[in-house]
Image 1 (cartoon, rainbow, N blue to C red):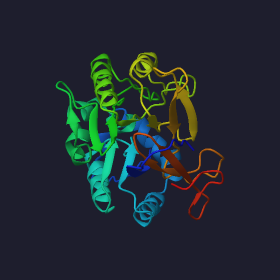
Image 2 (image 1 turned 90 degrees about the vertical axis):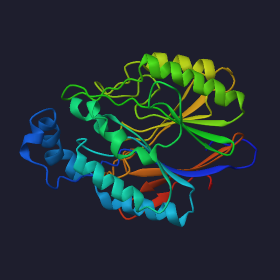
Image 3 (image 1 turned 120 degrees about the horizontal axis):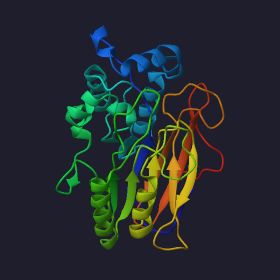
Image 4 (image 1 turned 30 degrees about the horizontal axis):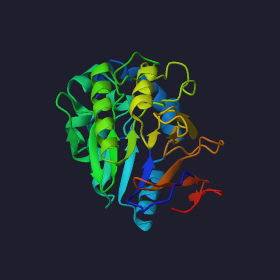
Amino acid sequence: MLKRSGIMGLRFLHCSDIHLLSLRGVGPHRFLNKRLTGGVNLMLKRGKHHDEALFDRMCEHARDRAVDRVVITGDLSNLALEQEFEHIRTKLRAIGVPVTVIPGNHDAYTRGSVRNRRFEQMLDEFMAGERSEGGDYPFVQRYGDVALVGVSTAQASLPMYAVGTVGPEQLERLDGVLERLGAEGLGRIVLIHHPVVPGVSKKRHDLLDIDAFGEVIARRGAELILHGHEHTLLEGTLAGPDSERPVPVHGISSGTNISQHEGRRAAFAIYQVSAASIERELHVWDGEDFRPQPGEAAA
């Protein structure tokens, strides 16, 4: 738990890497690219390890616990197909709670999906917000004294690679956004898909400009960074402008993973945040339901 005194502002559920699948009407010609290896992986491994019913149960928890918003940090899809994004859009609209999303590497699975801006075109309603001139990211959503800052690391990469980049132009915009929001005294929650703490990503899963991202955070700061990607629970910090207050970084495991291996079980976290306070309650799948974890304070 992270906690500082103050009035609470935004209550949200964070999850990631839900990998919702729909191949209805997808012809075999759509697999004559990187999706060939992805499709094989889906049949042999990923498709057996993820269960959409866990996402449905998670959404029930979101409604029961009266969160203000559901936040998903990428990899909503598997292969970045139109049919998947149509299915995802339908699911998100049905939650009954406002949703914020950012893309992950699976949401930019092929060059064609990136070129057509498929994620942005089909899920734009879940990324409404302020933008600097020159790009879709970062976007800013304000809730009282709290701001969600959506960053994209999504890019098409070679088969067997899951790397990402923020890119120099987006980093420059992010620098300005964090400076401006910090000057306004807002609690800045940065949403990003790839891990930003050096050394935690698997081989060929890295954020390629991780050092440049860290330099922006060291210069401008943030109150919290949330990510997914590695399908495991991770905690760390990055240096911020105040040497006595490093920036906390929380990585969440896949929200639909049926694995019972410690650290890789499906999970979500409920945050209660304001400019002065951050509290977290972690919930982990035990094979029957998501259960609050001992030692985590209730939000």
